[in-house]
Image 1 (spheres, rainbow, N blue to C red):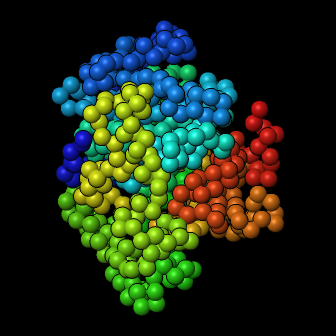
Image 2 (tube, rainbow, N blue to C red; image 1 turned 90 degrees about the horizontal axis):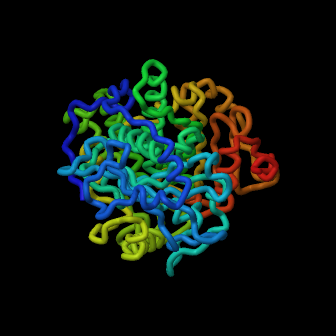
Image 3 (cartoon, helix red, strand yellow; image 1 turned 60 degrees about the vertical axis):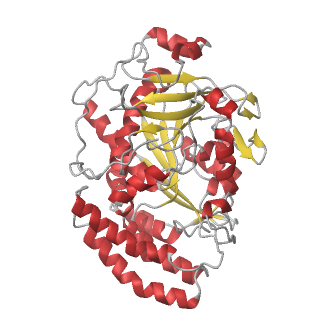
Length: 508
């Protein structure tokens, strides 16, 4: 639905100072607050048809919000949720830029519960995978949804976002890099909290994985810097209460990723055979040199984009250019001979069937003509132009950690797509107040001292300021492979309690 942009020659690189905010956001009224509490919220925000241009009174942006019924039945009955669209910067009647979201209320004390913001990887993977694939009130099966006993929404609000524009049901002009995409998330959150003002004071935790390793540090950096700017002037924007980040199996640092990838493929496992490993090891120096050369150029000029594309081409050949003989890179315990690797993961098929159902679209407030794909080619193509994946997004964690934003990485050990040795490598190299203790800390068995399935390395009080968890029996999607375990991890992290303290002691 969106059109890929050409490179932004004038865009700032992710680690440069942010551009000044260009929009003042109107704060909410008491009437809106009362409307959100009651059933009248549905009628108050729901506009038909969805693509008509409306400014949601008293707000100067498009909002089309409905309350889905009977499409996600959980353990305690029909899940309480809101879904719909919010128009982002640049949205107008002639050119739309609208983000789709699905907000699930916590079953317990939703007014005060932390808000978990989740989106997909890709770039261009739907943000609905986590709620409907592992931690939401209902999860998908071959025959539709079923109640989820391992839901994180029992005690936490979950806000699932199809991000960036062009992903899932979000539509309009797309961006081509994680920094501009992060500005859209900030814009979305300001407007979401204007529509749901009772949530603006609550803690915000951002979670994601895979390409989320690029998205999340960019989003957190934009939020942190905009929050700091608010202390110097009154823009009318809300200070977002960003508390921490939860990242699974990310790509964040291309150097560490490719430096350690063949160690995972050829030494720890047999993803490639002996001859292929030898051929790929011979190509590795050129890959690493090209990455280093690409880092000498900054921003999104054509020359900088071209340098990153050259590095990506050389390095991608190492990751994907050899015959795996059916080994699934995302979970090396498995074999699959499908031509499209996504076909090896039935959840992608189930989620497309679900969101293409006319009844589901109607319940969510999505126009019937809208197509839904779990992975957007237009977004992937746009990001390919800038080779955004070759940027060192991990460096953004350094100022975030120094300023008190807690960072958790929980990693499925069987994933070769974003393999754990590369993740641990860049974490060890981060120049933060936690670097020396992190590098010297042991990996402690968990949840019991004699466990051989999970290890935790945590630096800081409670669950830690900088924490790394390795899950032995999980691949690229840890929350799908180990849903009960990941729920336990998330609860410990969000409550910020010691890993050996039972959650039941503090959760109520």
